[in-house]
Image (tube, rainbow, N blue to C red):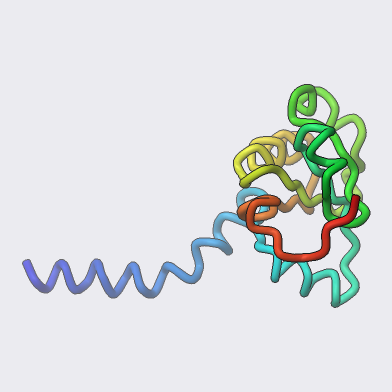
Length: 128
């Protein structure tokens, strides 16, 4: 029994670093603020889509972001965004962006990201 448990633990430890790679191969990628900043620093260009309510967007958002509020976004994102762009969804805490990313993937978008922790965990610059 201990041998089986040891095999499971070792297998999990070896596979854990690759789970995010497997997830990105089958769908969008979830990146944190530090990863987003590093990608921007290396020249990556994103269309940042903030899906929070307009009043929260006006209080503060990531520079250059556009606001497509979650209510109604399901019908808008695939029509208003370009499949050629690299899209980063930002919401309150993450899950709404995951859902909308799925819609884009279903519509043949290839470069779709969601900001882990949303604006709740964002530590970068905020503009009004």
